[in-house]
Amino acid sequence: MLSSSEEAARLLNKWMSEHTPVVVGVSIKGELSFRFKGLVTQSYPIVRIVDGDTNFVVDLRAAVRFEYSEAREARSEFREILEDEYACLFFIRMPSADVFFGECK
Image (cartoon, rainbow, N blue to C red; front, side, top):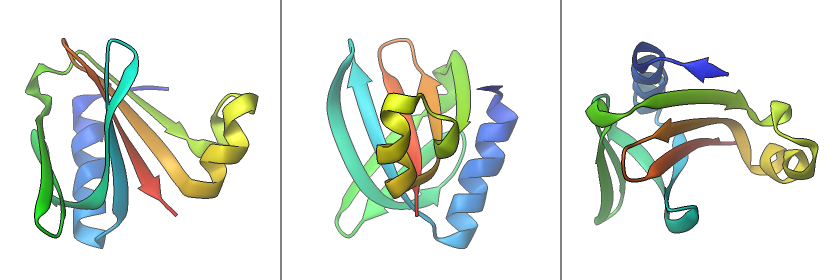
């Protein structure tokens, strides 16, 4: 389901305030380049995910598309895998990469 930057901000703020573990992944040219699990410590538009000494920062002001999906709504070939690990997924298309956030169960 297409989403907006305002909805992204609400979801990221929720994860930050509730200390919800999330997985963030970055895909460049269709290849998964980076995957990281941590907590949101800074929200929209500059998002920071931290786990101990490691952190990931992404500026979402350049995002061109937001898409939200419940794991149970995923395509059938991915649904079982996603439902076991994630409550929901949030995809963000950037000019040079795609970023996804998965709310861990």
